[in-house]
Length: 350
Image (cartoon, rainbow, N blue to C red):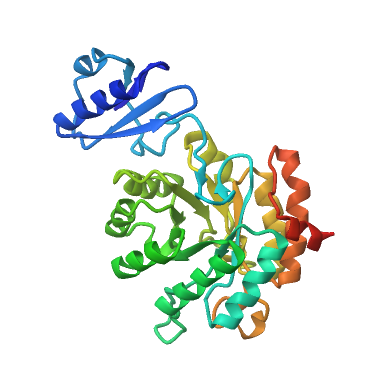
């Protein structure tokens, strides 16, 4: 159910509607828009009495939302969601492209700072790095844990990059929320519903990677779990799905971008590193991601990928990343976007 407020509804009227919804034993989710505020309702097992809601001051109409994902739907919020980061000009969604770059795993301070310096110089706004790694083999490198989070906090302080890192369980979730700026829920945990709910309670931006066999609806329902807890700062990420194809690690499904844009207001990033698993495919697929309307890209960068402890074959070199940024800067205006780059990055590019 969706309560649409009149364009001139006052904050007091909006709060009165929310209070009425809470009195019914349900949960209100006010989502302000450019022209109106819509209030989503969750927790109802059946039809909510429209009459009482429609009679409240400031209410324009009450609409039944047929989709299972209510809060992620454009029925609730027509305008695209833009997630900002206080104290910076970094954002995910809107007119600017977001670029997230860094190694698969934080291996040591020297490695992480070398890569961070390179991607910051090329114009990235976000640094990605794994502190906790969900590896197929229990004998593979599992990450440095808290030590990696502290290294990335130092990178944020030195280079001004916002930090994106993955959480695997409630313990790592709490630590990631304390030290990072964006919590990543990986493909393997996309349907870990208890973890999604807990992430929703932390009020920190959450990036959800599409599961390896997940449909569009399943990805949006994962976002709905986070949003149902009152956290509306959700970013979706396409990272490739399993198919019969054997020329790449996964099949990068760029068709999901326009499909998601049609039904959801949430921003979506593309991860061509995991999506292809091949260094020589990352740049062309990153260009294609921007061309098809994605809100940004997430790529793995390593200064010595031949000795990387994880995902070396799909990690691009810093010079390849700089070339990619130059390409994206040229493509962005064609699709009505802009790639924000610092003066330092512009000087490096020239």
